[in-house]
Image (cartoon, rainbow, N blue to C red; front, side, top):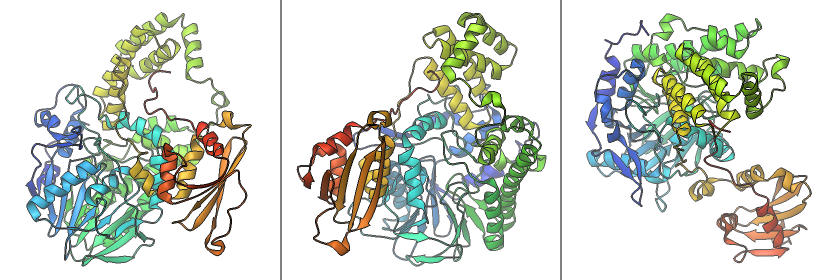
Amino acid sequence: MNDLDYSDRSDFEDADRGFVAALSPAVVRSDDGRVVWDGDAYAFLDGDCPANVHPSLWRQSQLCGKQGLFEVTTGIYQVRNLDLSNMTLVEGDEGVIVIDPLISAETAAAALALYREHRGDRPVTGLIYTHSHGDHFGGSRGVLPHGHPPVPVIAPAGFLEHAVAENVYAGGAMTRRAVYMYGAELSKGPAGHIGAGLGTTTSKGTITLVPPTVDITRTGQEETVDGVRIVFQMTPGTEAPSEMNFYFPDRRALCMAENATHTMHNILTLRGALVRDPRIWAHYLGETITLFGDRAEVAFASHHWPTWGRDRIIEHLAGQRDMWAYLHDQTLRLTNQGLTGAEIAERIELPPAIANRWANRGYYGSVSHNVKAIYQRYMGWFDGNPAHLWEHPPVEQAQRFAADYGGVPALIAKGEEYAASGDLRFAATLLGHAVFAAPGDSLAKQALASVYEKLGFGAENGTWRNFYLMGAQELRGKVAHTALKTTNPEMAMALTVDMLIDSLAIRIDGPSAWDKRLTMTWNVTDEGRTWHLLLSNGALTYRSTDTAPRTGAPAPAADLALTLTKAQLLAVLAGEGLDDVQAQGDPEVFATLVSLLDTPDPDFAIVTP
């Protein structure tokens, strides 16, 4: 930290450049009056850095806190800090193309309204998703409400599959952990939430998804939308499994999606996701420089502020390229010397020329957890030590620690002793065992909360700080409830029938279904296909067939055959019954299936058993 140049104000100049107007008050509400975004709560960031915030993170939060409509270049605008991500608006011949419509429909509508207030009531003539993460598509109905005339909706190949896998299949667990990662439920202030490194925090509105109509499948593919030429670069496996950069040749502007922002990103996010590939990430950044580096005059991304000037753009992209290449290669070099992920994370340091670049600081990802993720990508969870092959789960392990230390009070005392000596990391380990051994012990909870708070206050990484402070808050009795819902009717409408069945299969209570066997046929008329479902040995599997050649033929033999539209299928799955659909066979079969579905817990415990 001593080598960081706090006198360098170029990021602040870039973040202020092109400012048009702010939303005032910076509060967005849902239709029922609930606050889904409150930017005004962060006014305290205008002050000097307090003792309980890392100064580098304070600086980043000040930059992320700049809110409003900004001109990027002629005909391209961004709305920043009305959500975790940016909305970019590109003016065409007849209207405006929206890139990445934020997380919530409410914040997206507010961002579009702010743009229109200052640039005129231009219709939305196209929508582009840069990649498959929820903060880049969730607000789609805020800019393309139901009944809007059809427009091109462009996304990289595989977008819908990966968006569903992340936000529906494992959406419950990821959303719960996202509450910790983004800290939206923490109190706002120097002792609480100050940001998430990638942006301020997540909005808490309605997540929606308008399905893509145009797939981008190859680098060099060119599309024209509302008179605007766009050249695409496919970058799968970088920041998201399905992602793309693109260039506007007539504006000399480069969109970097989330592949080059002003922070070290994540190889594996703390909320959970597929492990990313830093090797290919570095490769694609190099390719971007080759494809567009000598032509782009401004580069902007789905988070943070733009970079202007060809030399500065290339320097920025090359700095991130070398960061990922170094972390990848050095992690594998040490892996091949026999070190484990945790050991490598303690050893690796970035070269000063990389580490001291503000855009490479670990505000969102970190060297520590990214190195462990790279190790995991290649080697898996097992570090090769037989002692770690079949360890006791947390509660059973904690009980043994408590017994060996002479009981929970002795374990607490030893944990506090380590905390007093400054070894907060091992204090957290011991006190975590105390809480899991005796979850009702208030002294253990208070001691661990105090340690988590100190760890949070010292963190340069925004998501680490949020995790620590959320853990402390819950240990002190305030459980944060998940506000975002990734499994709502808007999301369900965007799913294919295959995805709907997969989401049901994930919810089957396997042991309860061991001895059940049932078959169903779903003839979905507006899809022109029939799905044959089989529940056996606790597993729900299926296959589909094209019904067109057999129009009018009876459905294949099954315990229950349903003939219905996709909308009717969604209604049935939502619990509205079979009265309005054509059913042949035993209706109790469907009731049996529903009775075997597990209900996810959106607020499951994290810091307690």
